[in-house]
Image (cartoon, rainbow, N blue to C red; front, side, top):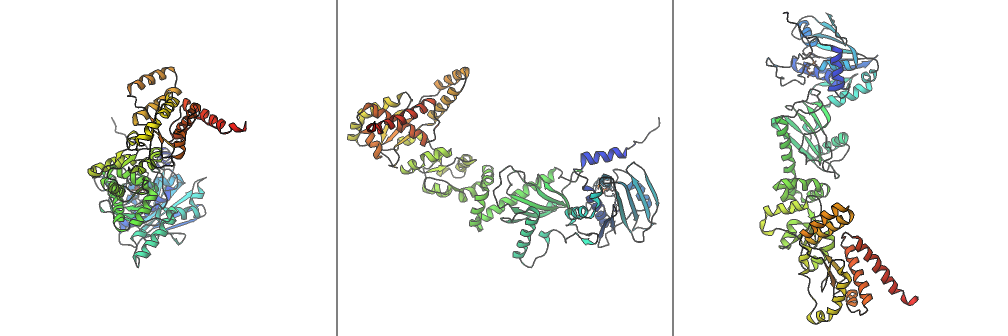
Length: 586
Ligand SMILES: Nc1ncnc2c1ncn2[C@@H]1O[C@H](COP(=O)(O)OP(=O)(O)OP(=O)(O)O)[C@@H](O)[C@H]1O
């Protein structure tokens, strides 16, 4: 049986590349540039010049690189998947940008015909190779005096714009501006002498200014700070620019990545750990690998190591900032606290930064957790913003320090702080426990209050709460509604039951019985002048209205959920009191 060779349908392959590998035909120029730079690298002993010329529907890319002999032309240009840039074992050779042996095909995305005139620096005559997208090629003698290669593309119908000067200039600048060889488009230089973070500057201040300007030109913002990056094992250098405004965590943070000084893409993901959303980076890496489309980084162990190293670097920057420029750190934390908090949840060092530098809202004013814990060894935290608002004044007046831990990650952070500092741990506040701290009125007053208390209790009995009278600060607060954790849970169940259908109502009803009933309390403040007047009332009907009014107001003030019965009481007491107030005008 005769062995047969595979046939390749070139049109099919080009179609595959254009539709499924490359995101845009614009990559053609990158591939040509890359080949020219590799040829110069292979030749070695020339300064290297790539001249791109546009005009009359054609594009020429000329390099003074190594060139090809006729034999190489057959072997390399006309064989898809063959590359001179791999060693005998097929590994990509380190100095070259290309490795796959398919790049030249991308020229068929914009041209039906590729012409290559080349002369090898190793000797032999010049050769002209013409390849057509239909799958045929011709080789004939070419004219060329110096070693090097000229690739000419004639535009394919509909693709002419991509071969014209404005597009070519833009593409050459985008992909090639950092390349280590000179690149010109119609005589105009597009290379800028390498990465700006590696350039020489007269002093650090000027370097900093240059990098800030660079950031503004590529990302469109003035950075909050500039962080140098260096990961030797990946041959990576670059800069991270700290974004000067807060960014929602989890938002896509794309970085500008160069591989061997050729732009890989402007929107590369996966370079940094998830949490590092407060920076945008520009990096150049010699050792990281591209995917075959050269539009993303290949996910391998090295990339993983780079991510870890860059994460470390950013963390180190933060810790250093804390030690050397606390004012700047505070500014940073105000902008990016969500991200920093997210880091602190999984990282002790970040936890310390948060503890020492991030200000929390507390009953004693804004301060850091470390400061708060020093002043309040028996401090508590409120797990929701509402609870904090509701209770911070009362708690503070009773000498209980309260921290607002109602935002994302706060509770986790405070709980984790226990592991750092078990002696001064903050505990969650249980509102019911607060009543025990509120002072009772003196014995005589208490005795005098008994008849009132009995009536007041009747007024709210149906609402399931217990009335107590206490004497506490702030005096401006007439009444306080305190629900213990379990009582709060009950209330939520009830709201859910009222809003659900019969089956669920039964289930929730059964659940209700399973939880110990710990009645919420309506605490009337004897120190408040209005409340004191209410306790002195004698008219039964008026007492009922007034106590229900205080009950409803305490619920509203504390942002407690209102059940239908509560809403009814709110309406009834308000209208009833209004009635009383306007009685004389009847
Ligand atoms: N300007 C050039 N000068 C010298 N040789 C070239 C030039 N352009 C292409 N070649 C030769 O043609 C081969 C195939 O090029 P092609 O662009 O298809 O693949 P590659 O550069 O090897 O890999 P990749 O697919 O990753 O770009 C190259 O390996 C190189 O030997």
